[in-house]
Amino acid sequence: MKRSLFSIFLSLIAIPASTFAANVAVIDSGTDFAHNWIKDKAWVNYNEVDGNLIDDDRNGKVDDINGWNFAENSPNVFYREHLNTINPILYRVFETLARIQLGRATPEDVQFWKDNVTSLPQEKKNALLAQLNFYGEYAHSTHCSGIIAKVNEDSVLLSARIFPDKLPPEYDGKAKNIVYDVFAGQFNKTFVNIGKYLNEANMEVANMSIGTPLPALAQKYLALAGNKNPTPEQIRAETFKIFTAFETKAKPWVDGTPGVLFVIAAGNDHNDNDNLPYFPANLRAENTITVAASNGYQQIADFSNYGKTTVHVAAPGVAIDSSVPGLNLNQTLPMSGTSMAAPFVTGVASKIKDYNFKLTAKEVKEILMGTVDKKEWLKEKVITSGIVNPERAYKAAEYAKGMPIAAAINRARVEVQDKAELPSSYGLPQKNKVSLTPEMETWAKQLVF
Image (cartoon, rainbow, N blue to C red; front, side, top):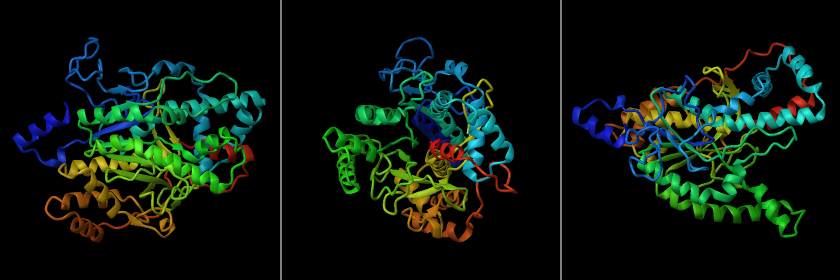
C-alpha cells in the first residue's frame, strides 16, 4: 500500500523502524517487473483496480499500478514484445565488453570477437552496434532497478518511464540515444508531472541514471547560428547559457519534491562537470546528489565524468552485473557507466531510510557524503573526495536516532573501516595480457550507459 497509510499503520502498532521499506522511483526507460530479481519489489498502487480502464484514484492516470509511462501517457511502463527481436549474440557481446572494460579480456574473447564481429561486413557491424545501443537503452531501467534491489532487498520500486517506445533499429547503422531528445524537448513538462506523481506516491528516493551532455547541444546551437567551428571557450560559454536555462526550468520540480532525494548519474564523457555542465547532474539543490563511477574501490572509471565542486560522491560502476529483460526471467548482464553507479547509491540511500525513516532527504544526503571512504584518487574529482561506504552510512543512520547527524557520522567513521581497495568482482583475474584490436577497445569505450 502507499507509504502514507503504511506510516500511520506503523505508528499505531509501534513496529521498529528497521522494518520500514523505502519507496524508490526509477526515472528511466521503463522497468520489466516480470524479471525474477524485481517482480516482488514493484510498488503497487492499491487505490487503483488493475485492468478496469477506470481512473479509480482520480489522479488522471488510468490503471497506474506499478508506475506511469510519462512519454506516452500510458500505464504500460515496459514492452516485453520487443524481446522477440533481440539477437541472442548481444548477451555474449556485452559480457565480452565488460571484461575488456575491466582489463580482463581472455584469448577466448579475442577469438569470439574475430569470429562474430571483425568478420562482419561494415553494414552488419553498424547494425550490430545499433542493436547494442538499442538494447542498452531498452534494458537500462531494469538493470538499474536490479542494482537497487541487490543493494537493498527491501526496496519498493516505482517505474517512471520517460522514453517513448522505439522498435529496434533497422540495419542502417544509425544508433541514436533518444534520451537527448527527451531532455532537449520535453523535460520541463515531463518532470513537473513526474514531481507531482512522486509526491502523490510518497516516494523518498528517485534514481536518475539519465542525462544529456550540454556541450553537444551547445555545438549544435552554435552551428545553427552559423558558427560551425567554435573554440573551446565559445562552447563552454554556450554550454553554461544552456545549463542556466535548463536549471531555471528544473527548479519547480526539484523544489516541489523536497521529500525526495534525487540520485543523479554524473555522465560518461570523461569531462569535468565544473567546466562543462551536464544536465541534470549539475543541478544544485539540497535534495540532489550526483554520482561518479569507480572501478570497484580502487580507481575512478576512465569514462566517468567528475567535478570537484559539482559531483558529490563516487560508487562502483564498471561491469556491474544486474537484471536485464530476456526470455529467461533470470537473465543478467554486466554493464558499465555512471548509470550503474547512481543506483548503487540509490539503494544505499533507500536502506538508510529503512534504518531511520525519520531522516529527511537532506539528512540522507548528509549521511551519504559524510560517511564516504576518502581516497587520494578522488581528491580532485568529487566534492567529498570519497566513495560511498554502505555499512558506515547505515551505522550513522542508526545512531542518528539518538544524536545529531554530525555526531552520528563521526561515531560511524570511528567504528566502521574503509572498504578494501579491490576492483570490480565481475570476471576472472587476467593472468596473461591479451592483445585487443582497436575495434574492441573503441566499442568498449562507446558502449557505456
